[in-house]
Image (cartoon, rainbow over all chains, first blue to last red; front, side):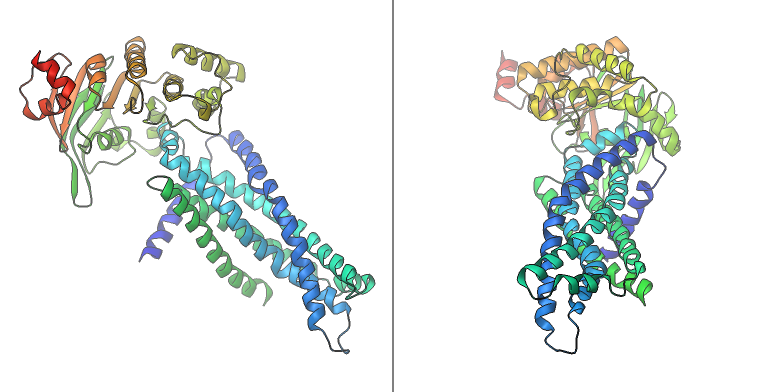
Amino acid sequence: MKIISDTGRYLLLMWLVLRKPDKKNIYKNQVILEIDHLGVDSLGIVTIISVFIGAVITIQTAFNIDSPIVPLYTIGFATRQSVILEFSPTIVSLILAGKVGSRIASEIGTMRVTEQIDALEIMGINSASFLILPKIAASMIINPILVVISMFLGVFGGWLSGVLTGVVSSNELIYGFQYEFHPYDVFYALIKTVVFAFLIASISGFHGYNTQGGALEVGQASTRAVVHSSIAIIIFNLILTQLLLI
Amino acid sequence: MIQAEHIYKSFREHLVLEDINVTFTKGKTNLIIGQSGSGKTVLMKCLVGLLPVDEGTISYDGRLISQLTFHEMKMIRQEIGMLFQGGALFDSMTVEENVSFPLTMFSKMSPEEKKERANFCLQRVNLLNTNNLYPSELSGGMKKRVAIARAIAMNPSYLFCDEHNSGLDPQTANVIDNLISEITKEYNITTIVNTHDMNSVMEIGDQIAFLYHGRLWWEGNRDDILHTDNKELNQFVYSTELTRRLKKQ
């Protein structure tokens, strides 16, 4: 029953969030600020994780291909496909759900328990829209950019590890990276990323906005935001893959 | 003037407000007093429209808030200033940005005009050279003064103060009380103060409503309160050793 009631409350909140903004200029400035806070600040962790995961995928693929029939460029091909189709859009989104989701929930939750949201409401401002909409918009703009960067870095990490460890030559890897490339795969990954970005920001915003109590409850809301965003990402990953790839 | 008539409010089975009938007069500091849990905060939240009432009507100078559309309610809220218990200043904004925030949202003032208005409001609450400080850099009393400056930035017709003196020393609390009283008279606004601080009651209580277990138990002013024979009110007023001794003298 709780899941039905929470889903209903989430949809009602989204109805408020997606209403016409009071002052568009202020929202634009907020979106730019949020792009910096939520996206640019996440560049470091996305870079480190993408390079290392790309490197590990290459080494593991190379380690598992021991048949002489399978050409070595398959390593590059498998690395590229894994990075573009699954690692960059899904795993990076899961990481962002942890980093960005907890930030959104704790920021809005703290504003709730310190009555800052009440202050906005008293002034006649649609607080749900004012606080959550810029975060959703910023995430939907910056996350695809982060994911594209992650794709390049993942492939680069794969190349670097392949060449440095000597498991496969640079030429074979580069041939594999380019082999049977379909731009639709990138399109599919970006569609997933945009949906995941909406889920992360809106679910985290929902948990933050409905925080009641004090510091302890802000922490609990933050944890719930990460858990629920991650579950939603996994479920929508399956749905979108079914819809877009099959 | 704000009128509340036959207000009932409950949370699940628990009745918090029962048949409250009270009028808050313009140009006066109207106090709602009572013990913790008596329903003061719930009444105030109902009055400002943060909580819907179960039964009854609330009107702002004849405008029934239950009959207003979303847009009309938004307009009325722009006539309301509110001072919260902890100040509720926006952490990410400087003092000046906090004070000019309502102007940014609802006026067509130029940046220079907003700055001028913010400075005027900050001067009014005796805060100078704090424009670029963040709330975390302010003392409790300064936060309350910034919150008052923000509340009066839009020239409100109604000012609500929710336990504004909590956490302040008696001297600073006195300064804030007097500031509220002065602003009320200066701008001829309807001020409603929610408190259980007897110093505030004696300092600024032009009209006092005493809530007891969710009911309006007594009404009067700061002179009446000292001579009432209402048992529950006397228990509340003379609940400390200091006040009991003063009464004996």
